[in-house]
Amino acid sequence: MNIWTEQLQRQHLTLLERWLNRTAGTLTANDLPDNAELLTEWFGQRAQDDYLISVYETPVGVGGLRGNEYYLFLGEVGYNLIRTATYATLRILDQAFIKLDTVNAWVYSSHNEYLSALKTMGFSQIDEKDDLIKMSVQKKELESRKYLF
Image (cartoon, rainbow, N blue to C red):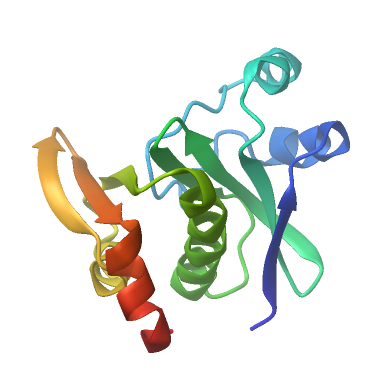
């Protein structure tokens, strides 16, 4: 599967607008606004650590970092959600670990397959709150397991 990430740009906001309020691909907690009017403001205030995710040249979602907190949102359907999420996570973590030693993610507990993929990457559970599970991975742990993917 051909999956890649690129820096999120202002012209990508129309894609995010189309994806608002879709919940199937909401794998982690995120700070994406729930209405189109707030997207431009959100884009202007965010860090430069947000990425557009594409599968076979088709944009399917967005992911990135807020400090050391990772988020992932996939808005399109018609592809393998977990495989896309796994490879997008690996690519974004490669960028994150240039600056960080540890990355956390609040993952919805209903996404068992994605939680399993994160555990294979080296993430471990460190907290739980409502329907979210806080997972954490260190750079050295991910590096020692990348051969599995």
